[in-house]
Image (cartoon, rainbow, N blue to C red; front, side, top):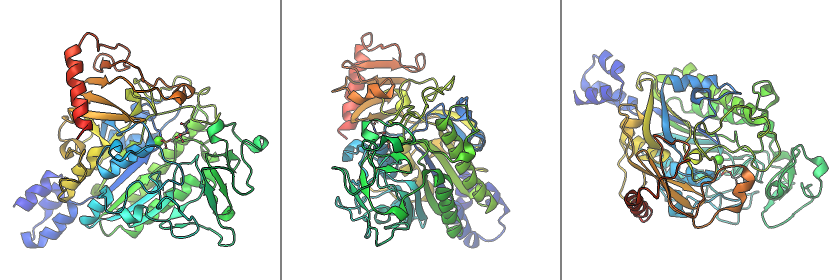
Length: 510
Ligand code: NG6
Ligand code: CA
């Protein structure tokens, strides 16, 4: 029957073949099986070369390598941007960050995705999914003047998530507290918390006043309120009982993810498991101190691997592995020095965080957005290395297709249905993809990379020791022969440059 045929098509042949009941009886079961649980592991600042399966040396990542080797290991997978907020925005809305002026947000920024905007979570909810986000958010909370002591909204719960347990912005920004659903966890009403990005408030020590209290020397931007011996961006006072301990992230977030999975194991669930690792400040648990030759950056990678393994093992223990699609990827490329002197640069050794690519976080070059990208669904996805050009933005429409939700014309406007690619049935992906970096865009067109001349060069990029690719002339590279974007062929190919420039404008102007 057609129902069985479609079930087999998505790889649930086993269940369908074993069915001997009438079609009417099997219909609900089949429908159930076409809606696998979806878990997205979203790592922070993990570079293309930072996993064993992608060539890492100096740290091992056995848990993730297992899903990479038994699923699809994409070699040309991209976040939409070279920084966090726009990438997260794109993953969740299916549109480019620049369409909503998404840029790195302060810790007290209002919600970037306003209620009413369709998201991956609200789309999956339409298909009956229980939806949860655990970990880093960095998409803003509240309406612009948030009272952290009251109900904090709008946030994830207003845009399609049933449950949220958040690190509100970044590990290096205040407030350094967990927010569960609408409220700060463990907040003592008699010790209210305040947050300011305008100047000092209260009497907590700061990096600029009390450098002797610091575990890491920090740059000027990261030199404000000290929590757990580390100065952060922004000022904060009060809320002492709620302050997080960075070294506990690995267990706190993993436990919450596991609780969510157990609470929702009977229905299809969507878990957006978003990590702080391997962003700064890097304060991995002591347990990982022997796990890398690269110091805390390598230890943070090992910690992230361990966290991922725990969640996968829980899914397996519950017997849900064959009914769960796992997508593993990162929000932007790697950075070694990002504000704290934590020896990541000195201890790097032969490890290449961006693999064969140039640049990294903040960069217009491939290292900015080309990140490890893995899809794993045992029994459905055949193990393979897939060289298709794929974007996180396409998860939206691809999953909509998978679970049978119609997407309206104004929804997820930059997302393409690439389900067959994400399930490894084809190695054909996108032809064109815009890569965003600090408000600039570059265009991937098949094997070509076109970087239109920059309007301005961000001054801080020099301090990051990263090749930014911000030039005041057009750049064109053939990635087939020049993956490191070293040989600019723009001058020799004026027609192609013209064509790609026009295509870039066309996509930007929608
Ligand atoms: C930047 C911070 C950086 C990091 C980044 C956000 C500088 C000078 N400082 O403003 O340390 O916090 O914001 O990272 O770059 S992201 O991965 O969330 O985009
Ligand atoms: Ca990031």
